[in-house]
Image (cartoon, rainbow, N blue to C red):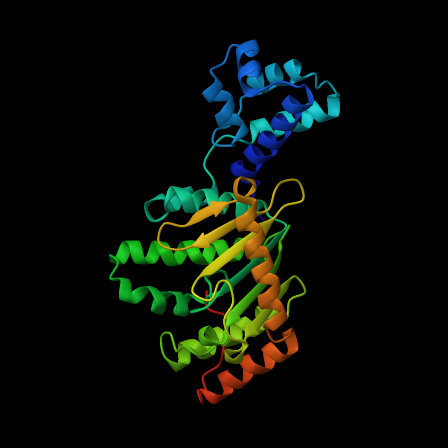
Length: 293
């Protein structure tokens, strides 16, 4: 399945290019806004990627910053034309918080993703049946329930079945592999899907065994994103969700160190696959395991 370039990615491309061009021109945001007769808040919104940029506004900024290379200008103009319109997740606005929507924009641009979950299989890896069983206790309205599951499946499809897929490393606690969300048949299918994904060259699935003991993130899940052209980002998964990057380098570094420690304590990929297969076989379910979509 192919997808058009998401407007959010074009906005990100523009914000990085324009911020660097401004800095190269030795202008502050206030100085640049004054010279181009914008409000400073408008320039800030452009540089944070929260709004698109018209071609005329882009040309004004590039002229101010001294960017004149024809190929570079044309490339950025194409990005400006593609920066308008909704992102793919906009259709799920009723079930997405603004914070998570912002995170999805970053996730779609990342070239690698590292995540750990201590309790359940993370949403990136869930089958539809597992996701439905996991959400059932929340007593969501039927329409909302379906939208949350659909969002999870589309996000997963874009991550694993599209072009430009990120390199992904998942560490699951052994509890997540053994917890029978939805019963034995649902878990058996889910474990089969983990084995399928883990066999792909761009995906690593490893299990942190019970005997590994405590670590920095024992009680919570987190995601680390890295980019070829921007600072790394940490997303802490909880009710409201929170992100941090260059504004809290200490916290980011702690979780980067934590993931390295967890990876060191985890079973390697073949051992993890053996454990997942063993748990799957011990469920004693004879139904055919398929990918849940």
